[in-house]
Length: 191
Image 1: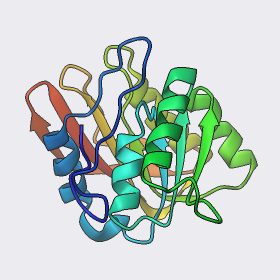
Image 2: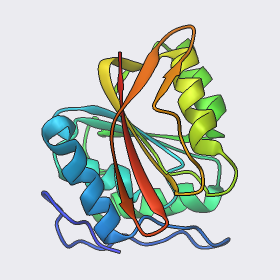
Image 3: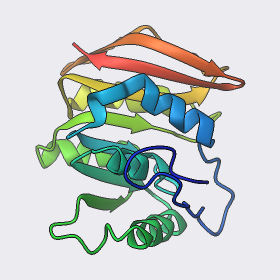
């Protein structure tokens, strides 16, 4: 895998050792960033289900100001740290990232308690467990995406997501989607 755009274009991203992880294919990752366009520049980004960190690293390469990487796997956290170090991002002061080794839903609750807010949330959960839907619901319950902020969920075409989700704290409205084989990118905006 390689970074598909920005400052680190062409640089390699190593996959985590250990259990198999479904990583976002380069062309799908590039399509995701084409979909969100300039919204990534200067943005504070939440990368849930980070895996190798490819989405968050791509965001940093394209001008994001800060990325919070979240994954429950120690293999993933090690891989993300190695990838950030290989790009010399780990040596920056202050570092333009945080690493949270925890479940995505627990992370959303924790980030709310810490009063964190993000301009953009990227979701790339394992397929077949309805985690994209559960994460979107949690984002409406805990409102850590800023008003008028964006959420992009990568999910299996069989895991249909609703056109809107309304929680006690926020509402997410589907603004567009793109299909790539079995993969769908759903773009939501907080209302």
